[in-house]
Image (cartoon, rainbow, N blue to C red; front, side, top):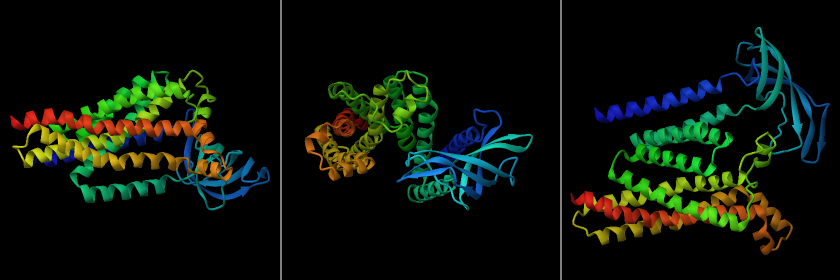
Length: 371
């Protein structure tokens, strides 16, 4: 009965969060009467389109039939304005399903603009596969993990990002966010237990150490914080007063937090299992076991960070090889320095989470276990 009530609670919470996100997503745009609707392209006019190598400027006139909304079935003609940035611009063809921003007056579309390819359906399909596999394999734990996944996104989307855009202190907001995320994620999976307390404290201690290193070495490396994707676009969108350096620091800590929680939970759960199976173990032996588990986990996790970060800048590394850039110049290049900084600070934080968690578990778990 208790397990059924717990499962029902997590299902209702997941449904509630998804309902709130869906309701907000379906609301009108900032411009009164404007909606983002799915449409099928029937024809395109490329007379105003100018190709410059791989880049295109100018625009397309896109004729499409709306597939949803109060004007469903009606034909609209929208402009697809191109900026010459291949990573952002999109070219549409007849038969494409796209997203259009449409202004509707008295049930009729009076103005339209082609926005993007409509990818939401396949994204939901991929998410559905993830959910099904997670629930089949992990069952009740998988449901809790799904709850923490969705809740984490909701906290970041509704608390951290609005706080940053509102001019709040990025470091303080990140510390509060990570504290919330750590408690929610670890508690969702492990419940209210001594393992949860140890893993939470170990994670937060490791991240605070990583934050200290971030602030110290960030100043020494003279990073301006403008190396993150869309940083320049954010500034020129009217947010001139944002502290981009502190926001960059926040992203470094936020990026390492997930792996830190993973290591802390691995160490705490392993030590708790050892104590349950061998109640007569000494505190020193228990801590030594935690250290051994931590060494094995951090041995692969630090490499995981390197691969994750370098994968995002693979094309940049290819350019360096093509241009035969010297290793010294590459290390001092701002983007490379920022990624090295991000990787090493995150790695140091991960390495420190394991022994800190082992020490905490040695005192908290051992004392509670003996009682």
